[in-house]
Image 1 (tube, rainbow, N blue to C red):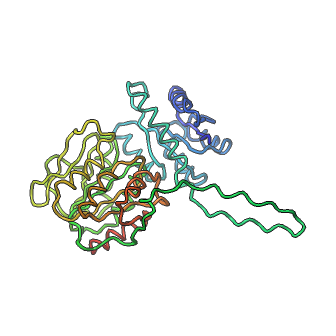
Image 2: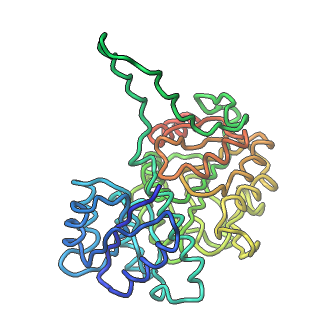
Image 3: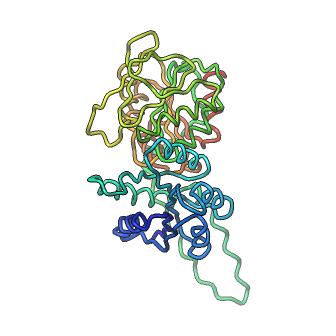
Amino acid sequence: MTIRILIVDDSPFMRKSLQKMLEEAPDLKVVATARDGIDALEKIEEFKPDIVTLDIEMPRMDGLTCLKKIMATHPMPVLMVSSLTQEGAQATLDALSMGALDFIPKENGFASLSIMQIQHDLQEKVRRLAGSPRFHKPSAPAPAPSPAPSQTTTPAAPPVPRPAATPKAQAPMGTTLGSSPQAELLVIGSSTGGPKALQDILPTIPAGLPVPCLIVQHMPSTFTKPFADRLNGLCQVSVKEAEQGEPLKAGTVYIAPGGIHMTYGARGPKGCIELSPEPVASLHRPSVDVLFLSVAELFKGPVLAGILTGMGSDGAKGMEQLKKKGAHTLAESEESCVVYGMPRAAVERGCVDVVAPLADIPGHLRRHFHL
């Protein structure tokens, strides 16, 4: 199936660059481009794209105003094209809060040596977001109407089967997290759609959270501190960007800095934050797997580990090791995920206790910690 794309950017160079990168994939087609938000809304009406890539800074109508109108009148997947400046980070976080599903940085006008990686990321994000469950809820097929008595009927074609789940994925899941032993550390991993998911979950946690919480969210280095600061302003618990060597404190949420791995260190009463560029070969930095595996290796008490929405499989291997050590495990279900990739990978490894929609996850956490 061909995915139909609308590109919105005030720069002719950017519009042409994005179109070229996207249309080198045979399944992606740019049906129109727009130079500003007003033009974009008209093109959406005319061309009815499957997904929109949206710049933020534009004349006449900026990207955030346009996004608000899209979500009010034509809700659809939107991928923001963002600068890596502090101002760009704040605007992008606003966009994710308003309904955009993800973003891609337009570093150096896509003219850098990393152009092939940027192109791959852009194409993959467009593919995954265009089919996001957020805008394409699975629905039961309507029953076929009964034919009139005089009609001659032919047998209906059998329904197209969905891909079979692996045997592990078909294993029955529990409906509640175990409450004993109560976890002494909470660890969470997320990627595409994660900023909004975390913004929905963390403010519901009371200030009395009795354990530290370590979170890896795939983000550029210029985004993680503004993101942590934004969450801190919304939450009862304290939220901050993690710093090298700082001791872990109950009731504090630590967001891994972009561009470097965060691991658990065994120093101090509750442990500490360790930051390192190693392993350099990791697909993601920070990596959920790197955090989870360090906890599985060094943390001596019970753990509660969660995986939220995201592309790929980061975190599944680490969660499997945590489960072998007796951790409680939780994954976001497909129905609420922006991209059901990371949770699916964990489920297919058979290491998830509970699969739950995003709206139910705060309740699971509060019950487990008796909050």
